Image (cartoon, rainbow, N blue to C red; front, side, top):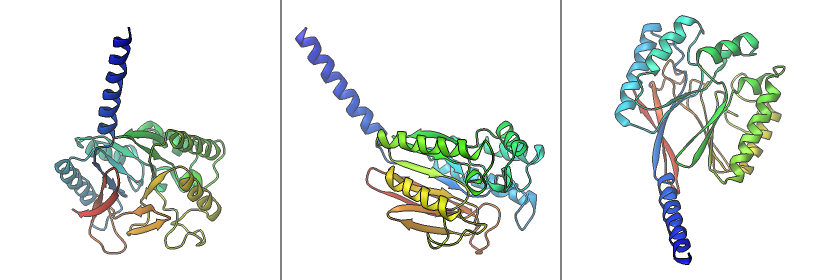
Length: 265
């Protein structure tokens, strides 16, 4: 009996060691911002081609997964969402979508949220990869106080973040709006979070092992560092106001580093 118990213990130790090594192996994923079909300078067809080109390049890179940080289309209709999903399906890896203001409205309502959820999927959720937690948020429910929705989303976010903290899982949070543009004390404008909510979320990030916050929306590169938390709103696939080329960002994650870089189309 003693010999059997020792064998079981050794087997479990070996299994857990292998499992831990597997979860902590280096990996990469891609951040796309604002595919926003129908917003580009050269017209709708060019936006489709830009998205297709991004899919081809990303498939060659073969990351673990892709996240699209909101504004999937410029005007949400059956036709534009059909075009978006038909291109998205060509990824050879999972693609996780985030709702933007063009997808659910600056002030979401039952109609816009239901349409997004029926057509694209959940507007906030969590997924895991390689021992890391990725929490996808609906930042429109933080920008506007939507009855029966904002409070539910807020409660879910705090509980989900806290649960990962207890498990000691490192966390990436993904949304559409950046928290701030230049200064974490700046006034609220169209492109950032309300000040009080921003302060609350930054505090939650610090308390719960958040490594980075990924966003879109600005149509220009905005990269900040808040107490070693990376805040990155990247280049788009539709139109960049700072004249940078269209493209996407590759995130490389290892046990001791998290870094990202831009790749043009």
